[in-house]
Amino acid sequence: MHIALLTDGRIPVRKYGGTERVVAWLAQGLVERGHTVTILARPGSTSPHGRVIEVALPKGRERSFDPRPLLPPGVDLLHCHFPLQPVADLPVRWTLHGNARDGEVLPPGGIALSADHAARHGLTEWVHNGLNPDEYRFSPTKKPHDLFLGRLHTVKGWDWAVRGSRLAGRSLVVAGGWRPSIRPGLKFVGEVGGEEKTALLAESACLWVPAQWDEPFGLTTIEAMVSGTPVLGTHRGALPEVITAETGAMGDSVDELAALRPTLDRLDPATIRQHVLDRFTLHTMAARYESVYAGSIGLG
Image 1 (tube, rainbow, N blue to C red):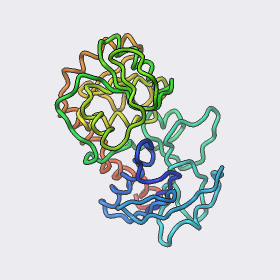
Image 2: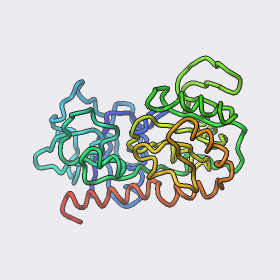
Image 3: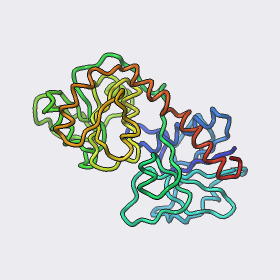
């Protein structure tokens, strides 16, 4: 198949940009499975996996805009990474990478990121995200600090991570925007990317993901796990689909998380990493999307 992947982001990503990372990994996985891939992304984008066409999408674009003039000949299916209305004479599927607004009506053809995500949005198909393990560093030994990595926003639960780590007697590194350090054992390092992010994921003793919203997937969870780092999260959204007793723990309050934190030190880093290698790589993601594509164009 010839698959066109359309994103309104730039590839590759230097720091934040989970959707763009997933698009790049999906392109690699599809190419390695023998498909032809064209990536349509913001100017400045590059990729070794498929042809890149730089496109500047219209500001405030409508879901009904026509992408056909952007596409090269021979495309079998367009996979858009934001909601898009059906297009005449072109099979179109799109992935919902966040949560829809209350009352928002989504166009047909949507694909969710998890079973929970699909159920909450009335979608019938979902594909878990996958990553490229080669872009991460596995470390069986850890430094004496935990990690919070993400936006410093209430829904991400960063304040729970700060309070919970203090109750558990753990030092915490917070990566995701600048704030002053307000107590011993609490360190803010701002936005991180590249080797700095890779090192933090590999060397931290635990990743705190105390989400206060329904996570569509939670990409940082598998980024930590593939590095051999356990995850401490809440029972929100897709997290119960990703976190297992062998890879972390989940609680529903700061006190529960703090009480669970010591149990993670007994988990085996190699087993944690294998969980991702078995279920959440770019290869498993590409195989699942391949099945969705085939069904959409009558090959399944």
